[in-house]
Length: 142
Image (cartoon, rainbow, N blue to C red; front, side, top):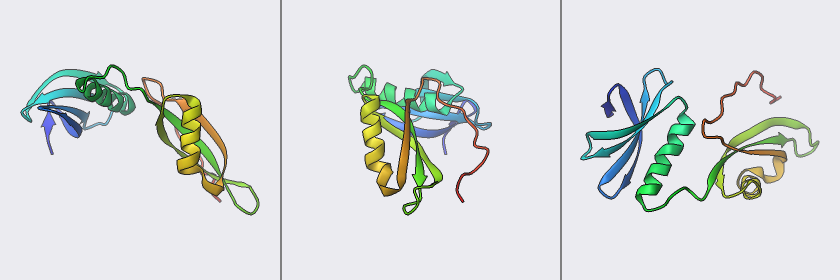
């Protein structure tokens, strides 16, 4: 496992001779993306308090290195209610992230990939730059 300046490298993307890496501090509260050359020459750090923002930055940096400007698709958080097939009663939630170019496209993708016969409600929202922070207090699965 690689480390640099107190950060453990958890993810990397190679673009030609350049590597972009994501590092996480041991406490899991500070994150960084670096450009890395020759496997140990880290420079141009971008620092974050959110893992979501750091992962987004990692992908943007790699995309820009490939000649792009801004990713065409954005991350959208979705949460759908899982329902009992016979009764239609809500029995849980299925949450995740899909990448799409619009909210409507994100809804369609979420339904197609994760909906199935057991989903009965869907909520979709674009992931903000700083990411989301939330707590789950009670499971609704019976």
